[in-house]
Length: 111
Image (cartoon, rainbow, N blue to C red; front, top):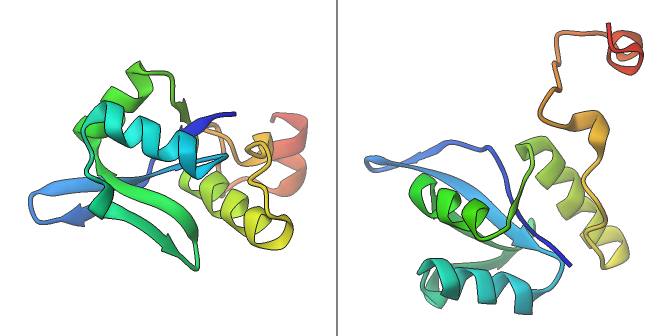
């Protein structure tokens, strides 16, 4: 069971926000409590159960063991949860080294 934070940088006032999601709501809420995010900020929308958190809270979550993922991985995991009921692991194909300017073959071959 894992908590994930993506690399999204959505402006919200003077802050930048990202997403925090987890395999279970229990884990998600436990991490939110641990890093000081109020439960009132929990969202359970079409994109699934998550918190929008500031980059400073993201750093705290990572220090507490959250796994860094890309926003594309987060979106694909949320889709997987809608289809199967489980996040599943982040797709390594769309990991932190993902470069959309490269062709499929280049990404697969590591060119």
